[in-house]
Every structure is written in C-alpha cells, then in structure tokens.
Length: 185
Image 1 (cartoon, rainbow, N blue to C red):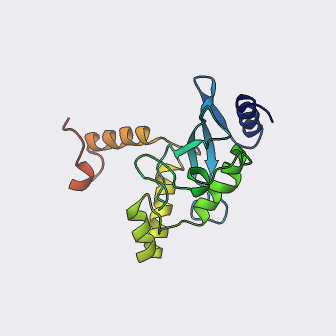
Image 2 (image 1 turned 30 degrees about the vertical axis):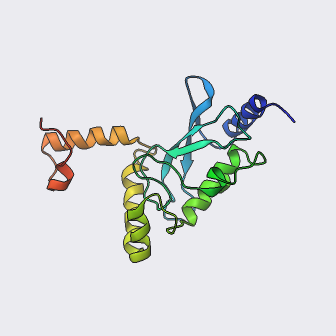
C-alpha cells in the first residue's frame, strides 16, 4: 500500500489528466478548485460550478472536504457556504474511493437525486416537497444566474460586486428586500 502523500499525488494527477479543469491553490496538491459541469438530462445541465476541494493530511483514509464556490439551489447544499451533505463523503468514505469518484459519480448522483428529508438548505427542501414546478424553475434560475456566466463559473464575490454596482448605478429596479444589506453609497 502506498503512503497517503503518494496516493494524494496520484489521485490529483489522475483528476488533472481527466476532462476536469483543476486549478491548484498556492501550487499545492492539498487544496484546489475543480470545474464541474451539471449532469446531462438534469435541471443542472449546462451549469458550470467551481468546486473547492481540500485534502486532509490523512487522505485517502480521511475524506476530502468539498464545497460549491458559486451558488447552487439544492436541498443538500448549503447556499451560503457551499457545503455538501453527502453521506459517502461525510460518513461512509473509504480509501477505495478516489477524487474521480467524487466528480464522476457522487456529485452527479447528488444533483440527479436530491434528498429533501436531510437538508442543508431548508428553503430548497421545502419548496421541492411543496411545489416541484416552482422548485425546478428556481434551480434553472440559479443555473442561469450563477453557473452560466460567459461559459465559466462566477464566484459569489464577483456576483455580489456586480449586484452592488447595479444597485449603486441605479440602472436596475430593486425591491426593498434586494437592497437590504447594501451600504448606502
């Protein structure tokens, strides 16, 4: 059995040589972002998300930490932090899994089969159970707004900056709810 550091290097290189765009942070293989495309024939098809991955020193014996950088509307993804509620990563992780499993199997399954009974986003879960048509529409709106900017994923910070510019320019009509939280110019 190889050491955790060799396995980490091998798994990251395998991910980099696949169809995924991988951007290391601080030229280190412990922390990086991966460009993830929504699964075909799903509400998320056509969306592109940046997934932040942190590998613990004990990887692959300890699960990686993953989260969506740009917003996604999903019952099992926290809208503010991007944290993912996925049993196979959080509780039943095994060293038999690798990073490709996360992006080729686990995340697509999460998006294709949301579990509203174990939510991180209560609003998405209740809307999904209450009004599936409205839920589907909101998922598509989030995809258009946060995951389809010029073909690349746009981060929340960039989106918030552009929203602030829109509000301060006075070019967009906003409700009081949308303006709340923005400082007066």
